[in-house]
Every structure is written in structure tokens, then in C-alpha cells.
Image (cartoon, rainbow over all chains, first blue to last red; front, top):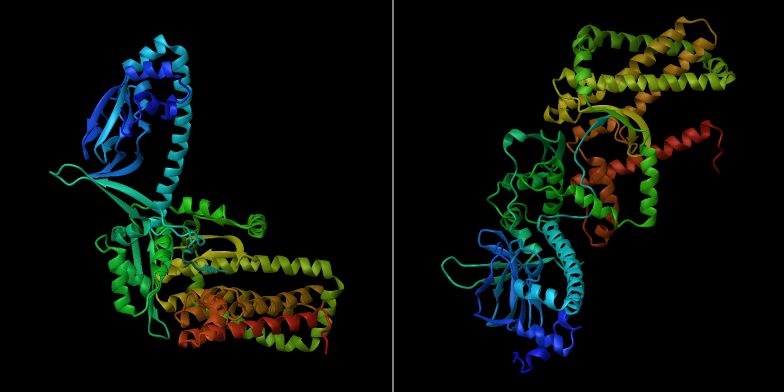
Length: 176
Length: 405
């Protein structure tokens, strides 16, 4: 059962990248998931860790951040029940690009890369539907990242006294 | 105004589990920003003479970018405090105690000026700033910018002018500023005055001979003006070298974006005394005076004819040019204006006056009377208006336009 009393299949049906799957496919998918419980404040994975799994938030809240300097990270995004993160780990063995922390006591469903490869091998039609949805989410997240970059630049310009009121003039004397 | 941009930061306390999330608005960071000027080897600061209100301006030169900033008293105070240790919040409190009133916009504008001049450590945003600003222009601003762009293409500049001027100065240019030459300029002037007084009774005949061949006369006069203008600017540059300062560049540009003219950038003389600046300013118009004097003496020596008329005409045009150049009240930043601005210790008199004119109605409505320096700015504006009007009326009359009675 998930956090709000739904069956696991009903819950998975609300997860964006699984919306195109029928009950049978969802049941196959559910059988490959592993449950993880994380206490508030604990780290789910660190930036630069080995990446090999996707996580679906069943309960609680996850905050994802990227290291800036010293003990300071910048918060990139938050995930609530029904959201998923770490999807890059299904396709790419590169290190994690950010750190994920539990902001409250959290329950996650973990799908490992090996399990995902099993789906691709044994259920290609199901894998295609999942991948199509994942690509849609990738695009949305890329757009959100662009917006975030714009906001970060706006923040930097404002924080350093940037002003759009014309080019400030330097002083000079041109004898004519 | 759009909301301040926000960032969420996640921090961890050493030795403690968990983390904290803080939302930081850009203006919070701005107040906490600790601007730091570069090492003193990268800039030079020179105090200027005190103005009528007793305040002092400073010229700050960036060696890195080879540009100059004029610092008012508050900006100088800011510069002194931009040591990387004081936050803008602390500095703004200090400046408020020092000056009584304070507009935070001064800090913003001063920071932008310092970025442009490369006089702040580690912050480079101006290129981006300009490209962002460009996107917000209205159609008429874009049209005006396009026209200005094409008009401004007639400009050119010689950036290694200092080298050429130094060579020219060392190979004889210095003689122009030695006593024998200075005395000879005086002798030429006296000779020219005598020549003009002797020729004046025949001025109608002289003018008629010029008018008889209008195209040729106009072409020769224009060529004379252009040639003497080049000499004028060159002498400014050589005078700058005579006082051991640098000529940043020379070239051809649109004075106040409008009037095509040659120029020599002698901003480096602000690192010298006021007397030196006045001397450099005076040196240019002296070229017109001397060349005009030579033309008048030539006209007096020549036999009556077209050549004599041309010489006389050239003398008149050059002396008028010197007078216009030395007359400060014409809205243009020519030599006379520069001398006036130096004498008043108000190096941006024209800009200040125009800015005051825009905000004056509002100020008067609020019952705030101008202070002493603002009265000077208003006086400058009034004299400019009257002078330009008088000049236009005189010349309209000269070209035969009849004004209504």
C-alpha cells in the first residue's frame, strides 16, 4: 500500500511516466521495485555518487541540491509523492549530478538499472511506452532548468547592483 | 517593478545531522555585497579644485582599461570604503551619517561605472547588461539608434596617437610652446589687427569679389576650415605632451552626437593642475587666431583681387571660429566651455545643467529652491539659450531670411 491508502498499482498509475501502462504492465513494473525508507535530513544519494537507479516518491518530500561551495548547496527542485527523480541513472552510468535529501520522513520506490534493462529485454512494448513518457518529462525538466538558469542570472545581476538604466558614462575630455 | 529574484540555499551545520534551507532574495545579497577595488597599481586618483559649494571632485583613472571616471564627493566616499571588508549595507549607513541624505541609487550607478572601468575585482557583467537593455527599446528608440549608428560610421580614431604625438613633439613640436614662438604669435596678432583696420574700408569690394565666385570660394573656405581644424586638434595634443600627459586617442567624431569634428582625447590632463588644463584648452583656438592673423597679413600684402579677398575671408572665418570655440555658452563642449567648467570646478557642468532642467519643474512644485551650484547651472543654461538664439537670428539675417516685425 502507498502513503494514501491506494494499492501499489493504483499509486503507480498516477506516476507520470507510467500513465500509459495497463494493469498487467504495472503489476510487472511493481514487482521490480524495491522499497526504501529514509529519515528526515538523511541523504538519499550524494552528488558524484555512482548512479544506477530511479526513485519514485511514495511518501514524504525530497529536496535536490547542487553543491556551490563550502557547506552551501543551491536547491534545484523538490519532489512530492507521485514524483520521481534520479532517472538519469537508468540510462547513464555517469556520477550523480546532484544530491537528494529527505526533507521529511520519506518512503521511496527504487527501480534499479538492471531491473529496467530486464523490462527493455523482456517487455519492449512496455519499455517503449515508459521511455516515451520519460522523454516528455526530460523535455519539461530541461525547460525548467533553462528558466532556473535565467533566474540565477537575474539574481546575480540584481545582487551585484546591475541596473538596466543605460550605459554608465566614463569621464573624458575630447578637445575639439 | 518585478519581484526580486530568489535563490534557495541548502546549508549544513558542521558536526550536526540534517540541513537547513534558506531563501535568499537578491537584494539581501546586494546589501551584503562587499565591493573591493583592485590594487592601487591598477588605478590613479587625483583630487580636483574645490567647487563653489566647497565640495571636491576626483578623477579616477583605470590603468587596465585606460578610461577615467569623475567621482563626486559621495562617490569618492564609496570608493574609499570599497575595500572588500565593508558591506554595502554598512557603507550606506556610513555615507548617510557623513552626508545627511543619501540616495541608494548612487551606489548602484557607481558600481556600474566601476564595472565598466574594470575597477572592481571579479565582477564583469556589462556586456550582458547592454545586450539585455537592447531588447527593451521602443520602435522609435530603435529607429533613432539605427540612424545614429549610420551617422556615427563617419567617425574614426587613431588609438596609438600618443606615440605619434610624442614623436612629433620631440622632433620640433616642442618649439610651438617656447617663448620666441609665443612672442611671435603676439606679433602676428598685432600685425593682423593693423591689417584688418587698413582693409576694413574696402570690405564691401572684398566681399563682392568672393561672392562673384561662390563655388570656388566656398570650397576653398571649407578646405581651410578642415585643415585648420586638424591643426587645432594636433596642437591640443602637442600641448598635452608638453605637460607630460598622455593623448589617449585622436580622430573624427560627432560632437554631442551631432557636429562632425576632429578631436584629441586629452582626459589625462585631469591628472595635472587646473592651470595646465586651461593652457591645453587655450592652445587649440590659438591655431585659428595665428592662422587667421597670417591670412589677414597676407591679404594686406596682396594686391587687390580674388586672392586678397579669399585671404581676408579665410582670416574672418578663422577668427570667428576661434571666437565660437572660446565662447562657452553654446551647449557644445568646446574649448571655452572646458575652460569655464575648469574655472568653476564643475567638469560636468553641461550634463548637470541639462539634468537639472528636466527635474526643475518638479522641484519648484515641491517648493525646493536651487542651491548655489544649481543657480550657476541655470545661469549657464540661460546664457546658452540667449546666445544660440542671438547667433541664429544674426545668421538668418545674414542669409536674407526676414523675421516678422
